[in-house]
Image (tube, rainbow, N blue to C red; front, side, top):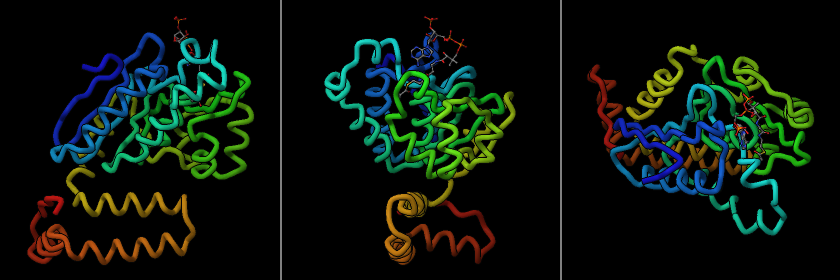
Length: 257
Ligand code: CAA
């Protein structure tokens, strides 16, 4: 049983809740290890089609655990922790992951959200990359992913000042897809997950990979991947099901084949 996270299975979705409320879900080595393991298990489970990562009302995650990790850290201890492998492992999960943010998503917390496929937020959410205030910089993808989401000039201002910004601003710069009321944010995030879980899983997976390629390859390579993925989907049973359901005016049932 994990110590630092809770896994709620509500098939066809699963909710992974970061659970170190006494330190605003600060990300220590144990939590990152347990989070990666649970995501890999859910990724391998056919009954789960979409995953939500969340925290609690007050905090998604307030960043790396400063007290546990940084006080005595040296480059050698940081290297030995090999956090990069854990972050890379999360990025490699194939099922769509939604970050449902309420409260603080700071430093590594904001970076964890940006490692997910979609970010949605309660109107109470506060994002930020405050590492500069500690004499360091974001170390889990923040400089790269925030710049890709918000553009160079907005990312520069946010990372060089370390200032916190609210959900509406996060939406306006392209970091957040939807802002939900404080009373219903988690239910709304789960409803989004259920909507995605009803879609054909192979198409969802290939669309996710194609969109990710827009940030890591040339336009030509991305278009090439998209074209091949598009043709490949014509070999799936779910394409037959989707087209047949449209023609016969019924609701499709997708099986992931
Ligand atoms: N690490 C360890 N403990 C943390 C923490 C963190 N990142 N964030 C909060 N806590 C702890 C506090 O120390 C406090 O514990 P105690 O009760 O034992 O003192 C408890 O959580 C509650 O926090 P506060 O009393 O500070 O709560 P607040 O509401 O007054 O302030 C806050 C909330 C603005 C988020 C403030 O806690 C804060 O600034 N936290 C640090 C945020 C930060 O700098 N994050 C970036 C970390 S670096 C990083 O993430 C690097 C990377 O790229 C991976």
